Image 1 (cartoon, one colour):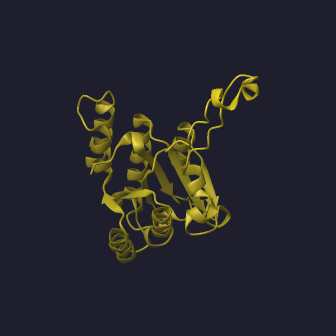
Image 2 (spheres, rainbow, N blue to C red):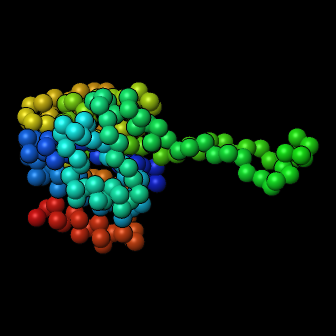
Image 3 (cartoon, helix red, strand yellow):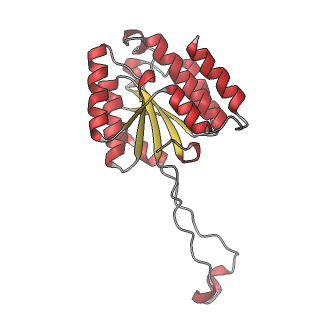
Length: 211
């Protein structure tokens, strides 16, 4: 089973100005989050962010917030550790489409009226990364799994204040049914082929991470 860019959405959890300095390997984690956001832009994958208690932990890192806004995404301010409790799943599910028709459509006999289109299935694969891995990232991932989303956690773009807490989160996520991947795995699975129009630009991002 591989990731499909057409089925994916990217959610970046709580990369905030007052939190990141305390995070283990914060520079590497933020660099990979930025690479993921740029990959999403290149691959036309919807991009969302969350911010836990922004008054206390600060806004989303400015460079990341710029990429979210450039992708026409939104950063969800929240107080629950599980972002689903503050409405994340509503952002990720497509709106119900209303039936369309001419002004006299309702005057037609019922058997001649167009049936309302079914609700779009949408993108049910959530690529998730963030901090802290054992708190907001973990609880949000479990909440999304409970909502029957398919969750893929990008491990090299996640961390906690301690390495032990981060690794404990990964163990629990794997046991709960989340797929654990890396930034490069996401990049090449979204691409699938070197003939993809975005291959050259994606490869540049991959090489930046290997430097």
